[in-house]
Length: 385
Image (tube, rainbow, N blue to C red; front, side, top):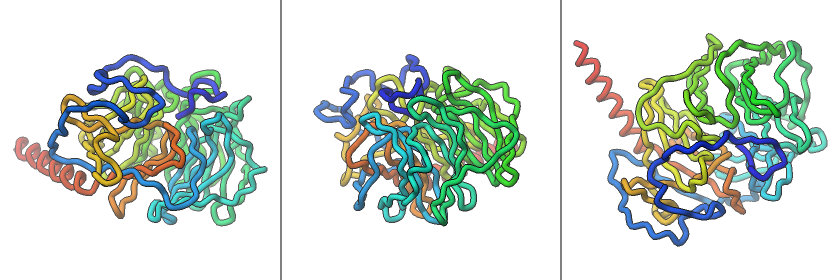
C-alpha cells in the first residue's frame, strides 16, 4: 500500500479500467482530497441503514504522515501500534507510535532506532506480548530480517529461525492465528506466490503448497479461523485462507462488490461482516464503502453519511443515485472498536498534516443489518419446510 513516488519497485497492483459507481461524471485534481469547489446537485438517498462518518484531529502530538507503514492492534491496551513507512518527501522512516483508540491520542514509542533501519512496506502481526515484523524495502534492497518488538520492554530482537523462510518482499500478506504466522505473495522484483507459515513456539518456517497466484498490496482481515483477502487482481478477487486446513481458495460471491483491481484498501472484521474502505483505483478521488457478509458470501454497499458536525456533504460527493461517496484513501490503517461499535481509520494517503482520524460509527447500521439477516434466514428456513 505504497507511495507511487517512492524509491521502491512497483508496490501497487497494475491499474485496469473498470466502471466504478458513478464518479465518472466529475474530474478532480488528484492532490485534492475533498470536494472543494465542485457543484453537486444530487440529493442524498434515504437508505435502510447508514453509518455516521466523522473526521477528527487528535489532541496530541502525531506521527509524521506516511504510507506503506505497518500497523497491528493490541486489544488489551486498546491501542494500535504503527511504524516505518515513507513520508511525503520520500524519506524512509524507522519510528514507532501507539494510537490509543479510546482517548484518540498518539504516543511515540521509545525504541532504540539504531536497531532497525528505515524502511517501507513492512507488515506485522501481534501474538501475546510481541509484535512480529517482516519484509520491507530499504531504498536499495528487499528485506527479509524477521524481527520482534517485545512490548513490555520495547526491546527489538532478531530470533533465529530454521526451515528456510520467505525471501524479502513488499506488498505481502502477513497475518497470525494462535501461535502461527502466515506470509504470502508480495513483490521483490518478481511477483511472488509462495506461502509460508512460521510456528512461533519452535521458530520453524515451512512452505505450504498453493496453486493461487500471489497478490501485491491486497487488503485482508481475519474472521474466526479464516483470513479473507481481497483485490489486486483481474479476477477471483476474494480469497479465503483457512488456518485449520491451511488451504487458500477462491470465494465465489454475489452482490455489489468493489472492483477486483482495487489495491491498498483497508478492511476489518465487524461481527459477521467485513467492511472495506478506500483503496487505490485508477485516479478516482471518491468511493463508496462496502460490506461483505461472511455467512451468505454477499457483497453490499455499506452506506455512510456525514455526521453534520465534523463532516458535511461537501467533504465527499453524492453520486447520481444519491449515494454519499467519501474521499478515497489508500494505504490507511484500520481497526474496529467493539465497545463503541466504531471503525477507526488513520494515516495513509492522501497525506494530511496533521494526520486526522476517521471514525465510522456503525452501531445503528449494524443493528439494522443483523435484523435483516435474521429475517432473511427465517424466510429461507420457512421456505424449506
